[in-house]
Amino acid sequence: MFMLPRILDWHIFRHTTSATLVVILAFVVLVSVFALIDELRGNYTLIQAATYVALTTPRRVYELLPFAAFLGTLLALGNLASHGELMVMRVSGVSVRRLLVSLLLPLMFVMGVGYVIGEVYGPRLEEQAEIYKTKTRYSSEAIRIQGGYWYREGGLYMSVSAMTEEGELLDIRQFWQDEKGLLVRTLHAKSAEYVEGGEPYWILKDITETLLEPERTHVATHETERWEGKVDPKMLSVRVLVAAPKLSVAALKDQINYMQREGLNSRSYEVAYYTKLLLPITILGFNFLAMVFVLGPMRQVGLGSRLTVGVLTGLVFKYLQDLFAPMSEVYDLDPLVAVMIPIGLCWVLGFWGAKRYV
Image (cartoon, rainbow, N blue to C red; front, side):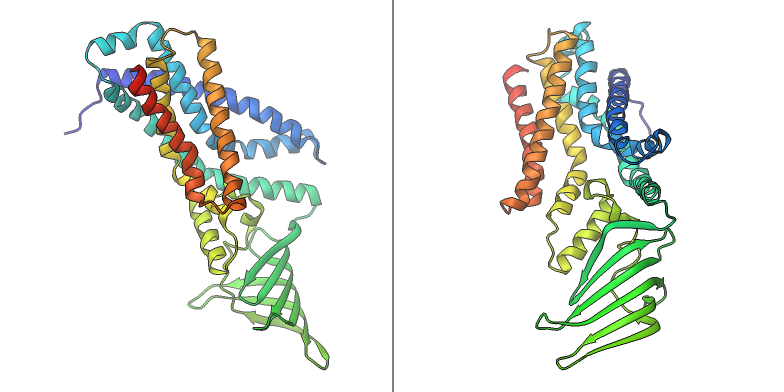
């Protein structure tokens, strides 16, 4: 039989959720203003810049969730402590563990919102934002990639200069090497179309082919040619315009699998993958730390002090993330370890504070 949560749980849920939503709104407005100012430095009108910022707002909400949840919990529990409600709860026999359980309900709500934004709507809108920005920049219906997108598959190195929203590739250049690493064939195609089926393949169109032989070079043209590459339209789509931290977990996993298969460096994608995958642990650790702060050293302080501590804690955590992420590449640090270090420090500080102050 379904049991309604206790009044205590709903009371904490209401205060924590409302405080978190207010913090998210304040942060998003602030960050979006700076993003709009930054976009206006490019070749855009105010409306175009505002449209791009609006499309990328869900991603900003997702990035701010751990810090907003931490600050929201800090403010909500601090407000309860200021009115003596937390003291009444503790005197009534409510343990720290029970308070943490009560926090799980708003945290589940926050994590549910984070999943919907980070895995469903956020990545799609991020792709639409990049499409809009690229078309606006180049005044073209085709989605042009600055510098081209390079794809590798065995002895093939391929550059794609542009694509359409329907998945057609434009201005493709292929460079083929033999087993010794010598260039033996180049190919330029004006477009490429993916053909689905039992054994899917690509049809290259309007081709100029160059064969490099030891004694001579042979140039030929073809209307079409079949290319049975392992890559599918998901890999060679507008997704290539989106940076690793802005991709969904599924897209990151696909990219990691491809790069590892081809012997490429996938650490930046692995860092983004584990950061998203461990987001629930990050949010839970942050809120545990907020509860320890309120029940311990910040029990009697005012709103301003709590805001200051909350913002500084969030900044320290963000700086640690930004520090250890590149260290995974520079010092060959495992990406999972690089992501876990800031999260682990958060939990260690929480348990230390709980043991000392609570």
